[in-house]
Image 1 (spheres, rainbow, N blue to C red):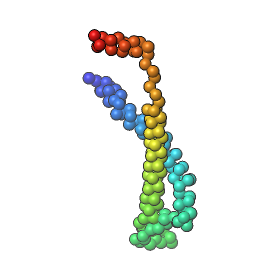
Image 2 (image 1 turned 45 degrees about the vertical axis):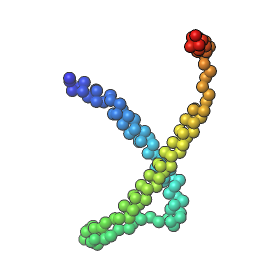
Image 3 (image 1 turned 135 degrees about the vertical axis):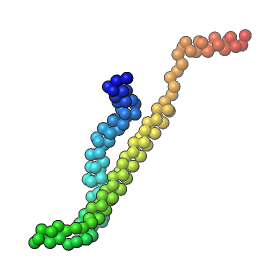
Image 4 (image 1 turned 90 degrees about the vertical axis):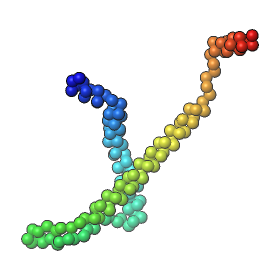
Length: 137
């Protein structure tokens, strides 16, 4: 089997195609979640926290000297705190969106299941009558 044939079989497997669709959908979904978190969820939280921004928080290990062009050595833990807060709210926003989508799907499935079955065709009715008549004999 040639290398090209093996690659074709690998690339056309259901798992690979499903993964590719998932990645593409994830990339398309990312701006929606970002906008939801950055523009809808974070502003009221920032207001509630008094506009707290942790990005400037750091632990200075060695002070810098601007005159001698020696850079400061510091652990910027505030950026990490901001990233954790952003992650937590992003994960929560995704959870809420997925929960809402699943709820809508359940409602759709219930409505679909509640639809009455179509009436049997006349041929089915006749076949059942013939079957029942034969059973009685």
